[in-house]
Length: 152
Length: 152
Length: 152
Length: 152
Image (cartoon, rainbow over all chains, first blue to last red; front, side, top):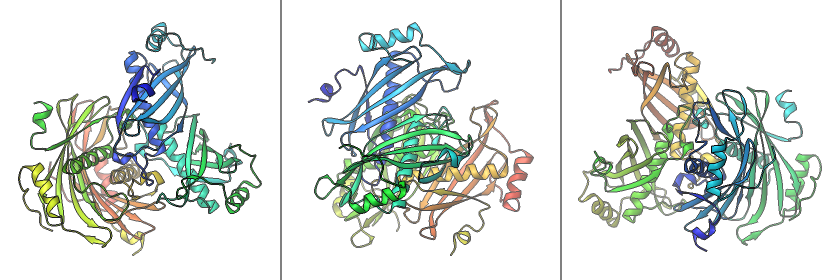
């Protein structure tokens, strides 16, 4: 299957060229580095959506990563270009789940699948914050419809 | 609760002093870095057990990380000392699951909980490999008994 | 000046898209990360030359990084695309010096200048190794002539 | 020589336990990681001095790293404990140079020597800032006298 086929269903794709130093002493990309790639894909998604881009100042509203995980399917080695798909799988009131898929151009196959639970937080108020209508609309626009609900 | 109390049930504990550069632009330890800490705890566990220490050469038998995850409970900030507990939660024929708990000495609370699925692999034979009696015994010794079984 | 103008005199250029996690708690790319970028540029150079590509096995002949340095000229921030130029500045019998220049596409200026001293090593013989005629020719081809000599 | 002897003349020493993931595909600690260690030693120095601790907010006065370098003397491998000495070598009006020495406990020898040029910056005023009398006194106290001057 082509890289594009392998990423079917992921509305936003971020390409990352591996750095040699991403590999560890086993000469494979280290497991922790996949989470850097997923983070890049998460950033790419919200830049594409035009909402919930990252608040650096710790003020206003921002995204908090509540949990994340990865299933490793094939080892990545330098040099390679990896395309990381991102999508919102479930959409709740003040939170949503995401899925990531990392596809190796060199291997032409899925290298890893990831997931995350993201909570929207109002740093000024010091509590979770419901997604606004604009934020929900931006996600639904990218996903081509409203993702299944996610309970709080 | 004390750090020791918070790590009750984890037979091996690895201490890690945070580096300033572990923090990202939000001035918290970056999510990917937790997986470096869990990896250090995993290494510490097998060094303590005296088995399944890492094969760098890609030959002989080694451990493969099949999946891993983390639930973030409290943000870590520099400076801090973090104690990471590791334990084998379930023990299968050629695989086992591990749990990790990261406790902040500065916060005196759990910063994150992690898990991993580890598969034993025979690189020379090119296939999964059953844990030997010695390996099982070393794990059971650390855990104070045989962990619940894990299906393949 | 354009990015291309700023990289005049660097025969090999490697493009790197910053990852968000490359930034540290000051919300700038961390100083250590520049050395990952320079390493990527070094790898790119030798892949382009077709010689001295990295020996992972610790056998045969390989490159050893004897020293490296960086002068920081402008802070990098996510998102950005950085082009890293690499060139061999001086060429000795068993060693050579390299220069790197990192140019930010967002800032349209030089973000950092780096240098390195690289020694060729024969792992099997356990000693430094003279560059072969092929290796010298490949470097001279990229540089458009023989770089000034470097004393051992 | 003992680790303490090898660090003679460095008034502040920071101990760092290597992480397995600090190694790259050559199974040595990656060159960029040494700069993370030096940064930790730099932080340790200013915490010990009680001045110029890092401003995260990008406001007030802070330290800017103008340049840094490293000479690699012996490869580091996991597991190891590394002691990093830091000292101010030259002290100018609004800047100072530092030297670092990384000593491996496993090898009982110097693994790397580093240096850095640090400039004091007033973020509010947007310009370099002279070291205060308190800051100079704190450095001279640690160094056991006034370091040689450094021209601007």
